[in-house]
Length: 176
Image (cartoon, rainbow, N blue to C red; front, top):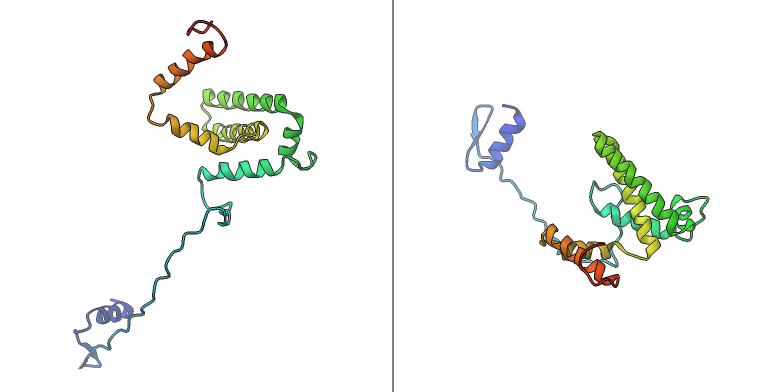
């Protein structure tokens, strides 16, 4: 056993005597440091500093990316890809989103997971650009997803399909 392990055991077992050069002596009492825990105070979200960009993988990256895209809305299109997309209008943004979605599908069908990851990131980025252009915030989508949570996908889709023809002024619930 190493000396440090013996010393630690002796300190832990205060009543057990230690031997020093053949003589029995009492172990010195260990002084414990007592520190008072500082009470945690909740900081309102509005005053909290944004999290650092490299704290690990999480869906919060979408909220941060959305904020960056939104901040580039009025930036110089020659310096910012987001500003360039936004300056081209909804049609071009939607076209770019569609292209990225198709590339994502191609990689999925081809069975290339690494490429699918990269294309999925492109799809999410262009979807966020589309949201910024439309004046939507991520919370709108998160709220809708939360509303649907716990509802059967089949039932939820069926309710939307029936509403569409009626909203279009047709007198049927069947899609023409």
